[in-house]
Length: 110
Length: 113
Image 1 (cartoon, rainbow over the protein chains, first blue to last red):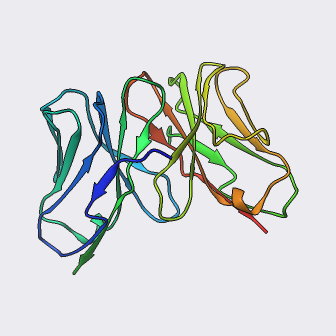
Image 2: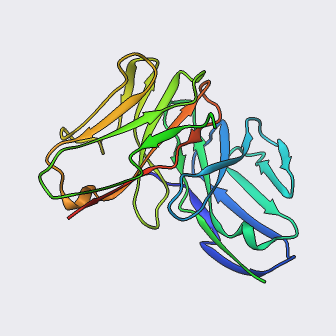
């Protein structure tokens, strides 16, 4: 099915490092959602973006809606062990359906 | 806790059996979604309700799948004559508006043996 491209697919980082991941789409959209999912659990909403260029923070997390409306990035500052998990982006172009990315798997080394 | 709840959390069934899952959305949310997630993939949209009306169904939702939301509150997803390929995590989400934030439940993990 349709999915967004997320990169990197996985990353190992040292505790305390900053992390950056992004999501790209071939089409224009009007909402970006970023989620974190732990094994065996449902995704937890981190940040929602509604306007091109919008920059939103949630604690150590910062996400931006790309100006072209085709991409978004998520930054995590000063990573900690509990940041480990899979990060998904999701977008909608105005229909009811949300399309999810392929996920970025983050592992934090203490 | 007033988040989205799903029941059961885990279900193991034999091929050919019918299963039913329940989702209770956040109480003030009138929009409800079902997704399926297989290992290593992001959630895939199955169907969407606004109040009791089922407004969209994915092609992934074969005729063995049926979803209902009879009173615009909780929803059920039934799979008839389960197949091994139905093994997945079934996620429910609710939203107060469209487009808007979607809040997920913990999921129901289905294993078909």
